Length: 88
Image: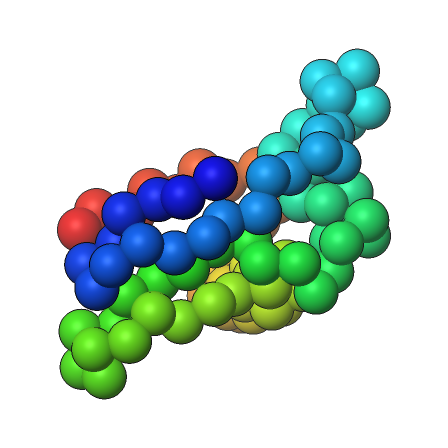
């Protein structure tokens, strides 16, 4: 599969290890299952305008960042089950 990026075409892997809805029941469980199955696989790419380059994030790195945010929210007094929205 090819997708268009700002600086030309790039090859993208086709994911064949699909996690079915019958295997997990929450987004957290889905992330945990994906990290367990393919921790070093690319989760997504993000364009960094400062460097002018695409940065790749693995599932393990993404999970680590989610955990970092979770700890920060807990430190600020948020409790499990609170809802958080990000506006940008």
